[in-house]
Image 1 (cartoon, one colour):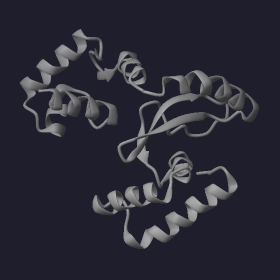
Image 2 (cartoon, rainbow, N blue to C red):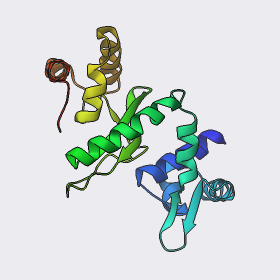
Image 3 (cartoon, helix red, strand yellow):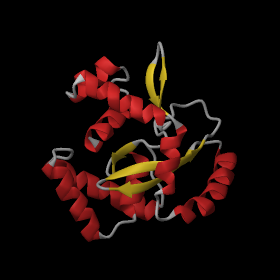
Image 4 (tube, one colour):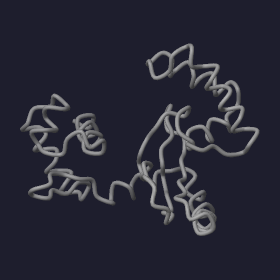
Length: 181
């Protein structure tokens, strides 16, 4: 049952579907089961139902996620620095960590530049695409990079012919100390 709840939460989070019927179609979980799980999640304030808009995740889920981060102290140190950096650059600053084979945004400070903001708290992405992932990858050891590359090659997120370009990009980020996307 728990794995079904996670599939439902991931579906809502990905914005693929947020109604009982849509979630049921997307996850292949029976409609009655989706309804029952959503009721339980709503009772726990994990999701909320807006009658005409469907279900959405509440801040409680973010709070639970952040409280589980072993390096919680990193937020205590990073947030003030992120605020100063956002104020000086007027750019949006995000803090990402590795979770499995992906990077996950755990905090962000909004800048005031009128550009697309495509990394939100909780968003996930591969390490070798986008500036946040590339910066994290640049801090990994060569053994760790190889492990990530193998995983991405196996699951089809990366093609063998892309590896040299990815390695060059990571090297550039290491040398320059930043990445831009």
